[in-house]
Image (cartoon, rainbow, N blue to C red; front, top):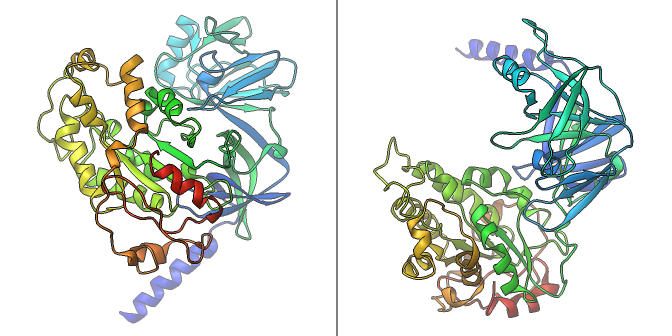
Length: 488
């Protein structure tokens, strides 16, 4: 038996050694500074991968199709006005002058005839080339090449559509459903790989523990600190499109009290939170990029999830949030209005999708079971707030079939989210050993700035709001403590 085990081990070693060097690798994450010819990419596991480029490395700009079709962004005079998601910030990218080309590869053969008959094309995975040409081509009948390539024309407004010209044939390029990203080449170089304000995907090969990139795809997320008042605490709001509904009123209520931020995305389901939380938190260990308060919610997108998967995702997210040293606030998921079918029983352990009563019966209780394990987390009960006002400002909303909010109902949620009443009462103190070296979670966390020696925990108001450890950036402690007495 021992000889057999040794033989198997030897064979495995031979296979590993026989694996050809330089196989393609792909790594994604937040750009962290390294040096003039390299960067770190902080992956969704929190690891940092050294990534280097060469003179041959191509850099592409990642853009949601709505950024270029006139919905959120538009190209005017070869300038792409790129709007950062969940933000009012706009970044202008100068495109090389001259004709643009586009390439759409690996088109589903079943769709080709429809594209020809209706002279339209979906932009799924499209590459837009600026400053370089591509040979025009159409899918080959009964062939393996199902690509479309030709001259490209950006949409000039929301009323017009982008166009792809291939010979005498013109296709209107637009989406009938869903969303997709496109890659724009020629707008960026390696000089645009700025840290903290971009996420990137590097594609290349590995050498001496580093990725040597043949191509880098850059996703701008905006500079979180650009509009910050350094004297105010920093607040991160993690949520789906409903958090976007009340964002305007929330920011107004908190103006002059905190620096408000939202990840540059719809945070969607808890599974997305689990995989993207490192990107959303950013480089919080660097001065000025820390977080003082973080509110978070996942629910509507998990309406068809299992209890085990949902709770597991939440626990992972919370463990990462705790490492920031920020004050944490769980936001309960708003109801599903009564215009939807009533929530039934679990099916194969999964919640009954987006149905009336699903949040009250399943998602919110499931979340509460996890949050209770972390008594330092405060709760903002937005579900109860909407229920309490069922007879007045939310009367029409409860009768409808749209989970989103607009107008005064949305603004009321924003103001509610900002006020301190939901966490005014102070509970008993927890065991301080949790915060000062006895917790396995703290012992296992990666290196972070040392806490201020002798610092004291901030006195925080609110139900189930417990003292926090000394802030990793003590120069902000005074403002942080003051704002948390009465605001987010």
